Image 1 (cartoon, rainbow, N blue to C red):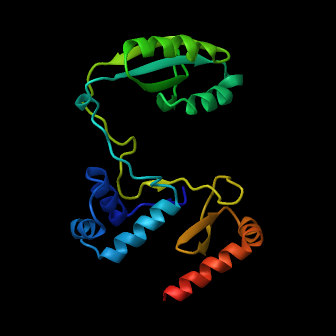
Image 2: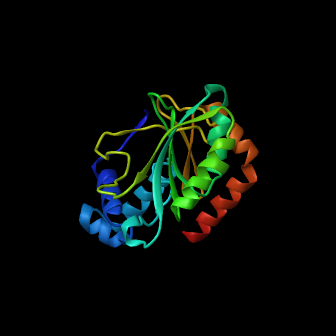
Image 3: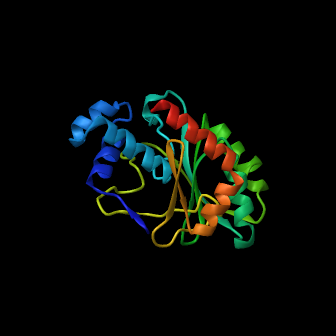
Length: 212
């Protein structure tokens, strides 16, 4: 883990997690920093992949219809990548977890009725290769649902190289591309990235210079 969150990063993330509609100015007031600082920090968090997207969190209890369920599967380890890929392509599947225990894959699904739920099990789950249905549980009420990560200062961030996708150990090599920072595991990958995307990097650099 080569990059760590500081108190400003944590304050910004918590402000957004509490209410994603907040403006940069409002977040700046909450965290006691300037608006440009919030903007720059958010860009950095997006660049590092800490924040992938900002989406509304829907309250399932507000909808008249809908079946929310957890399904526990036992997948042959030799087929787990193929099964995971097929599950990701299913609109009904909202979350996929690799777990330990009797099952090794747990998914959370959303469907419109019990009939659709049964059809999903018989027409989709049963057709997956080397998959055994261990159990299924319909969610009757959501008492608490929060982000999976507990945000705190000094929390380490795992970075992957923007060229080879390998895990970055130690201090990353950085390259500013337009308004974003790119991270690399070594100088070799950085130079290879510059060679491959040189014209695009120069174009973005010119656009930045024109703004200033």
